[in-house]
Image 1 (cartoon, rainbow over the protein chains, first blue to last red):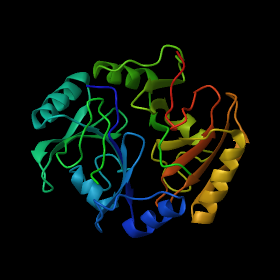
Image 2 (cartoon, one colour):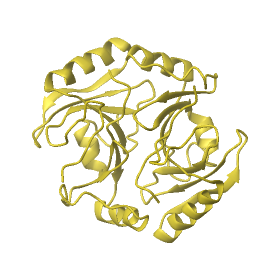
Image 3 (cartoon, rainbow over the protein chains, first blue to last red):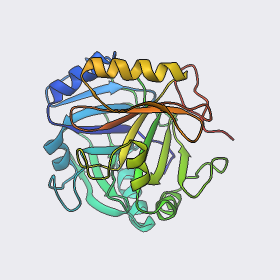
Image 4 (tube, chains in turn blue, cyan):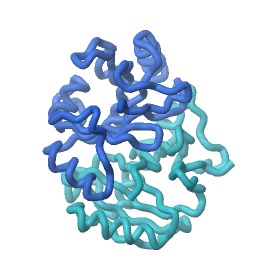
Length: 143
Length: 143
């Protein structure tokens, strides 16, 4: 597993209101990926996403208040291939992490699973053909 | 405010146990910054930190379970100067964020404050003379 973070996702009550706040901080979201459900910001070699609190919990396959309180935040590790998602999840399990959601095809065309560390922090392991991954692991939003 | 993330900090029950888990994933922590209280990993232009859950809450100036439930995770935005911390916090307040902790000198030699977004996600704004900041805002651990 390479030493990198691909995405930080904040679970938010209102995607529109939160997007507006970050715009007021001077940031521009990605027009190319614009939709009502999620906002992406191109950061320094990784991506910040604003996504509905409940939707994010569902994406991780957990209820918002169990098994440990959902914190509304995930860190993502994007892989170079679909197969690599499963191998990283296996590595995580062998390493002592808990598999929260096994690797599976997801509606937006990717393949994704989640593990949690000893303190319940959620890491998404995902193959995302829509967001190009550089050789150095940097994520670049389209457009 | 530049469009970047400097650090993701996970609040953990045991810094040693969590460090060991991430080592088993194949990652190497920074030897140069090694200490019992916190572990830093050099990531892709930013830093991942593992820090005690209670210590992290205290660093943000909030109790672990108030005002909103502490999620044990912060995102950091490092500045190029001490003065810039205050100007970014002022910008955040004008933008509608809530100032959780105003800018203040901290024991490790830096200057730091926190704001929270509408959903309680904590952003640390910090000037850290120990971790060099590149012109592009990338953070590089010493050593």
